[in-house]
Length: 176
Image 1: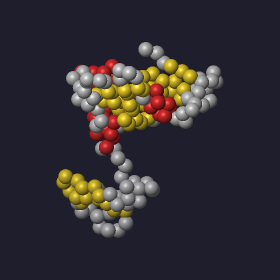
Image 2 (image 1 turned 60 degrees about the vertical axis):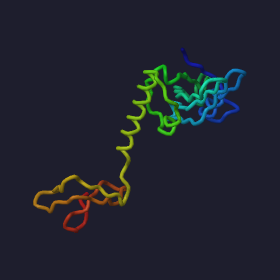
Image 3 (image 1 turned 90 degrees about the horizontal axis):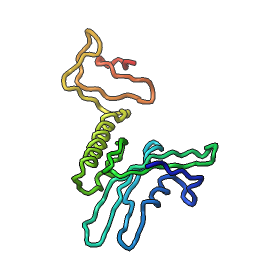
Image 4 (image 1 turned 45 degrees about the vertical axis):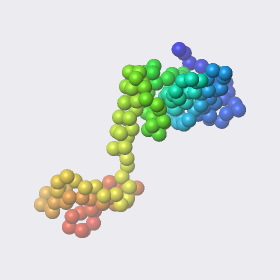
């Protein structure tokens, strides 16, 4: 499948609004509704799409859309996207956990692998959260920051807006 480009996303204001409207649809045999969506890094769209069919159980699947959006495109094609469902095994795996939590169970191997990669990415991102002023870091064992100084078992973050710093164990200022 290829990309679909267009000159305008009007009357929508953002790619997310446009794609939410594209995927939400009602017909005589099916109702599709975007329950939650997100655009990550302005290049990937993720959605939890609810599918209701008569005489079939409710299904919520993951949708991934690659996005190209530029208001200054020379040829005038300001928006393009390429969509796929989770069972196609998309490479993009930065889907927010709030969307993953809405998906119904599946047996599709590609979808299961995609969900696993998305959750692994989310877990990895949690471990990279920045430190804030006042956060306390506790070490499994006491450490010695400089030779011949007292060992410490924890640190409290000083002003994180400036360079990295740590309080001196002897109480005489901070290491910078």
